[in-house]
Image (cartoon, rainbow over all chains, first blue to last red; front, side, top):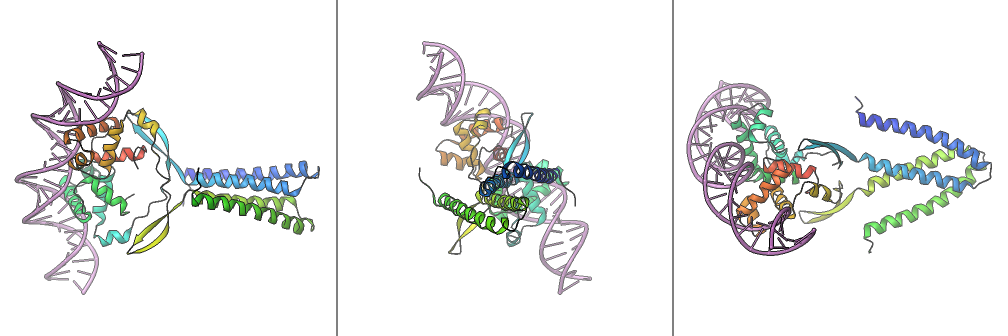
Length: 158
Length: 158
DNA sequence: CGCGAAATCACCCGTTCGGGTGACGACCCG
DNA sequence: CGGGTCGTCACCCGAACGGGTGATTTCGCG
């Protein structure tokens, strides 16, 4: 199992935080204890600090970034991590949608034309049209956009 | 400014946590300090505990609940927080997309046909076509589905 | 083996879409 | 007042789409 860059950076982050924690604790220990400060203040500070770190990490973990290109301008935009889309397999079967049909539906949702889908899926345009026609039928959709809409709300596609 | 129930419960939660913290600290102080334990262990425990609490809270805050009705049974289910869609107004302006165009884009995203959009917006089909054409242009899209795709990833539409 | 489901491709035909151009009124701003 | 933006509508035309029918191949299952 490989570590992707993001995960690795998180691990690295934790390591650094651990190191900083140890160092910080030692420092605080010497500084504060010798001047007879209350253990409560010390504990409270540490607690607040780490609650904050936890909060920050929590938000960080559920956010992603993605690059988009518009008019030849590449930019990186924060995107709310749609928490790991899970297909409603039960509904797929209930509607009798085949894997290939689902695949074509996904490509449609990506905004591709029939020709582009045909190229990407290595089939003829006619084949794409039959697949899409069938999936429209099963979804009760009359248009591509409607099929995509339905597909989303039925959790068939992300 | 009114406090909605969710926010109020969060405030309450924080209050309780605060109380528990104080009590816990006192308890630990007496228990541990008298037996001459290391301040580092104590601090580490508190830190870990509150990092955990922070993490938990962080995840909690970005999740919503919504009521759904399935076969006449109302139940409250956790929902992967679609963090209350907020339109990227800056990008709307940057792309020079007008309110009307945005409106038509939304209706397209709902899977409506040109005719249906015309009816819903109380304008002629031709008008819808000019609006959609313009918005396609500004989004660099060639198809409805592509426009919807771009609109979503740019946070122009939900 | 034969049946059915899935995938593939073809052809036709009517509708919808996208793209281009032009035009007109309302409104705001300098 | 004149220019700019926005919204509205029209017409045209080629490309894309959807809907229907039919046909072939492959594959698993009984």
